Structure formats: structure tokens, C-alpha cells
Image (cartoon, rainbow, N blue to C red):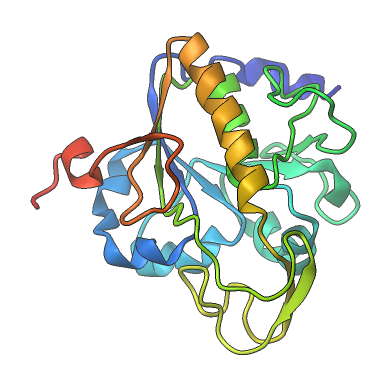
Length: 230
């Protein structure tokens, strides 16, 4: 148990958070509104900071390959970071960095992240458990395209030669980096669980991804949510 996390419980009770995933649809959005929102970024979102001109308040990464490939960039992030404990040897805890247990977790939705979170086959699911623990009443997801171009079976390791077509930056896993094929079926199982847990608590998850393929969460136009000109 990581008792350091207890002081964060319900820190943002009844507030809204924007969960920024890493799909190509981010390039179709006007992200200026993020400057006024509390943001959770994930994985290699730092590749878009200069382009999109925002910085997250929180950051989540649990995938082993992402943690190994981006250890230095993650260390350099000046925000509160929730890092999969498997990276403890390369990304140590400090005032901004918290280790989260993600291995051997039986509970499918972790209500107490000090005890761990279930990875749920997608970092977005880990971030939803963290958002719940932080007390957010409403989570708005953007950039969760939920469609991937890949060869092989779900969860298989692949090497991506050439530019990455599945994320907002061609350098995300491109240029010969290793990555794990997505498992959309298992991801959707996890999203359904998150949806149920949020609804049981009187909270909600909104999917405002532009053209997103996921059909689990309530859909809304991000321009309407954040009062942007159409």
C-alpha cells in the first residue's frame, strides 16, 4: 500500500477533469480550452505540449514499454505523476511522483488507488480509476479514437517501422520502437465497468473525442461542453 496517496483522496470533489488520450483526433481539435481546465495527460502526451500549448496537472503511465522508452521525459515533467510501480527502479518516487501498484490486482476497479489500480488493457482505464479517487464528478475524455492500424493479434508485441499512424505524433511509437497491439475488446470491458462505477456514485464520464469509435460512454461535442465557436 502506498499511504502517500491518501492525502489526494477527494482532492477535486465535485469538479470536472479533462482526460487527454493520444489519438490522431487531437490534431483535429482546437485545444486552447485546456488552459482553463484541470487536465490528466497520459503516456507520451509530452510530445504534444509545444504544439497544443497546454500542460497537464496530472500524468498517468503504467505501460512497461512507455515507461522504459520515456523514463527521462517522465522524470522531467513538472506535474503530479502516477507511475506504474514496475518502473520504480528507473523512475523513483519524489514530491511529484507516486508509484501505483498495477500487477496482481484482482479488483477490476480500484476505489483506493493506494491499494493499486487495474490496468484494464488501456492506460485510459487506469486514469479513470485515479480520477475517481481524486473525487472528480465529471470526466471528459478527448483523443480516445479507439481505432488502430496493426498486424498480428491483440496484446502481441510489435515493432513499428515508419511513422506511427495510431497516435497524434508520428514519432509516438514510430521509427522502430516496440509497442503492444491494442486489445479493444478487453478495453471495452474495462470501460463498461468504469461507466457502472461512476454511475453508481452519481458521477459521469463523457466521451468528447472527435470521430471516436468507442460506443461505451455518453457522447458530446467538445465545442459545446467547453463553449467554443463551432
